Image (cartoon, rainbow, N blue to C red; front, side):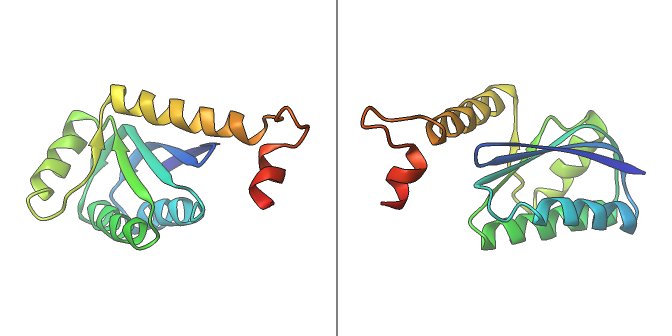
Length: 135
């Protein structure tokens, strides 16, 4: 069974995945969660707690990579477990997954948080970022 916890910061969606990504129901659950964030600039899949990745799950990651590319979204895979990383690396001869480490993840999160803060900032003239952007 796959569990997904979602969090959005600015224009970045982070999906923390836990369990096994092997059966079609888990793959479809992941697809629904990712494709729900079509307005995000970056979608990060935290694979720290994914302990099994098989053909159906790998195929769905390939599909989601193509979907993200078609929607100008960066799809990033964060911190896959050793067994998951092995499966991804074996497949990367055919597919170019963007696997990120902690430094890049922290940079992405920092950027998303600054963007979120800017959206709520009030400029000296009294208008907000949203009012200025729509003018």
